[in-house]
Length: 462
Image 1 (cartoon, rainbow, N blue to C red):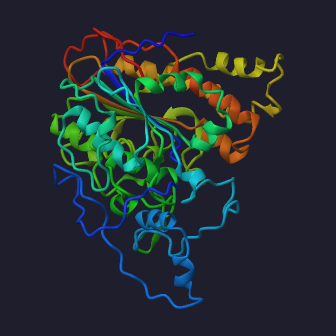
Image 2: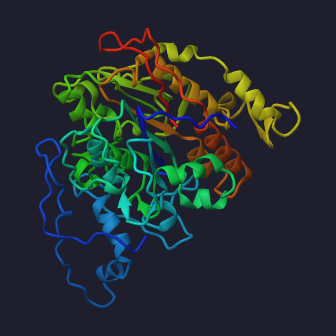
Image 3: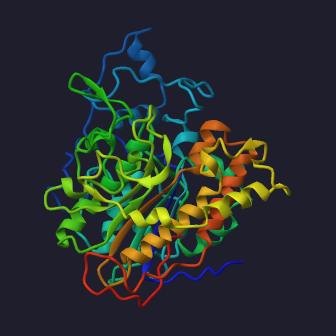
């Protein structure tokens, strides 16, 4: 088995499946304060909503008959001026939309494993029963950094914090997109490495997204800001902006109305930390933030693989890139397109059934983005990430750095083949194998904004 040695210079948050438990916070009258203008304790919750008079057989009575958690999550995800005017909540297992959507307030779309890991920085709490949401990620990271940050909706997950006064050199937020608890439960024997780490970290047994719709853009922005969509205002993959219907990243990060932890932390540290993200589409970048658009910020590293001018927001291309709308605000390391080995990864997927025939199981590899839409992308993206860590100097000195990662393979499979498919099993196995890789070293000649980085310890992204 590959080495499990992970050094204490790193703390990792692993969020599986930004995709109802009965334990939800109640609506209170506590005011909500912007993270950009406040420090200290998080507010107790969102603002109250007026009671609607209900008459028998009215639309309001039908709405009020829905489970409280459904209504609360939908309310948190709604903005009167940006959201759709109608929210459709079909009864399970019915759905509305193409491509097997998994967006809504139901348990299968809400329940997510959330795991914190980092010896010396993350407490070995094992399984934690307290309910939490994605909004608690940023304030927990702020606690680990020793950085004053008040999230609008989230509060720190104190069970995960070991109390080390020295912050980790690198904080990694890693998402297995759409890999919810239903996926891991269906393929319970196919993630042994991740399971083996649970006693050494903090595994939140009752973690949920916390809002609905659970689309990618909204949930990633909640991870980054500690705010629900009704505050950060990335409320859907189609937004109403005045009289226009547009997409959340059509103008770069302009429609994200709250700063992320990375925005505020990087600026407060004089843009000294190395801050970056590797995903595949722009709607992943809500974890990272505004880059140079935020006042006093700089061009943080952003790496995606988006098809320019595509009809859908999830369309990926053949090369790592930045779209023209993103280039003014982020920096793209073009050397990442020279990271090799992808052909070997594709061949391994092809050979997995015992023969080289250009197929992954029964699927023609050439038509699957020449193999990128197969599990071959997972070890390849991991090497690209490791190359970026080494050359950019993530974790190479005493200033804590931030890295955000989205792996999208499980999400792609869930839209095309479903959670019960053998293709999904292959993806879960590949993701777990990628996590067990030995940690990479930061390069001694790393290209970084800080002076003379040194590679005295190893770092890891898994």
